[in-house]
Length: 270
Image (cartoon, rainbow, N blue to C red; front, top):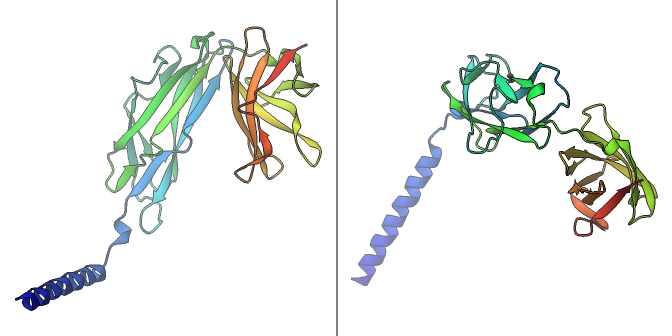
């Protein structure tokens, strides 16, 4: 009886294996895989310190995947969106106005992207603290197109509080040297720091960028010198000094012992 059971189990297992092999032989139509869309960037900052009227800004939504055969869409892709009211602090009619209030926009046939337009009301930005508009792509009305879950959200930060970091030369009390913050051409709220005196490679000081968002310091520099990157945060203190916590990375790893996020540097205005 025991041998009969073993034979039955063996025959049953063989049947399952054969079934799996047959399934693997079934041709699959990879050309039917969906076209994937999403925001090109997850965040944007709009900084204005005077009333320049309504200014049109555009944010890119792109094809992240072109379907199974990689071809461009032959028909328009209509994308729907909504304001995430639970997480937004900016108000329509105050900081911004929609150019089109239909709740949808289109990636044209044959194109790889669309520009989502928004009017920024420069005279309506909060002069004391930043506010945010959180937009979520909710889906498409086009067959064969889906929204990427990872790229469905765009956070737009409106900054109306002007930074005065560029008005002073600062003394780095840790390193015993002077540092200046110079506004970049990109935005008056983004500054280039002249150097990190004790974060060096080959004896050369390494500059980086920081963003002063109403007293909160954000550091996320592009790759420097082809290999190095500075990231970190900090704040502008009540006495006008600036505290920065940062680290220098090389090829994704902390460079040597230069991780000062737990040992912040303080820059005192002269």
